[in-house]
Length: 118
Image (cartoon, rainbow, N blue to C red; front, side):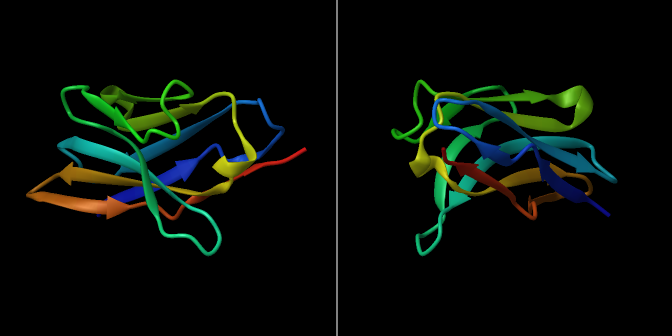
C-alpha cells in the first residue's frame, strides 16, 4: 500500500519562508511527475508547481521567482521551498504524485495548511 504525506506547513509572517515536503512510503518502484496544488477558502484548487521524473519544472506565474520545487529520489520526497511569502499564498497545499509500483497510479496527500499573516 502506498501513502503520500505532506508536512512543513505553518504560520509565517509576510516575507518569510517555509519548506513543504511530500513523502511517499510503501511499495514504490519510482515516482514519476509530482505536482503541488493549493486551495484557498472559497477558491478553486490551483496548480502551483510541478516536477517531472527527469527534473524539469514548471510554476504558476504567481509564484515564479519565489517558489522552488525539487526532488530527492533516494528519500521518495518532493520539496516546495517557498520564499518571500505573501498573504495571498495562504491556502491548504496538496501534493499529487504519480507513483509507479505494479502500475502508475496518482495519489494525493492529505494537505498541509500554510498561513501567511502578521
